[in-house]
Image (cartoon, rainbow, N blue to C red; front, top):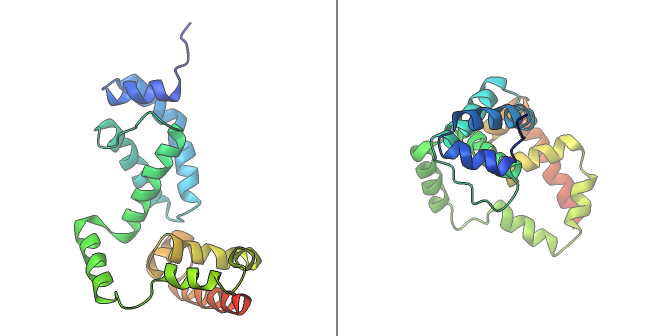
Amino acid sequence: MSETRSDGELLRAATDGDRRAFEELYRRYAPWLTARLRGRCADAGVVDDVVQETFLAIWRGKARYRQDGDVAGWLWRIGSRRLIDALRGDGARGRLRQALARLRHRDEASAEERVLAGVEHGDLAGALVRLSPELRAVLQATVIDGLTTREAAVLLGIPPGTVKTRAMRARKQLREALT
């Protein structure tokens, strides 16, 4: 009779090179991670690649678990960051391009600064709750996750023009609610 190992024990064994522990960890979490990531990205191919990259990072020791917290949460953080990178076509060049773009526009208020300024004038949480789920999803993708219009379109499975329209409507509704 074999005993079931905890997630933490499996993870430690897998990072130490135990192939069976890694396979068990994969069987436990790959379907769950895939389902969660598909909720954020409509492209099943991208999601499948991200799940594979997430588990490869664990197997190769590139992802370090600090043994303080939920294994599922740790896997989600790795997978969601890799999904954003995949949608951005990231890599070092993408990050450099973004850093340079931020430097060019540093005199402009960021989206976060504009939102925080709006908090002083109204109930932001209440205004966000009153938005339709479609408008909130676009705001989450573009403002909170920092995705471009094209990236948000892929993530949400809608055309880029729809992302722009919904973002415009969401901003208008928030502006009206907060002033």
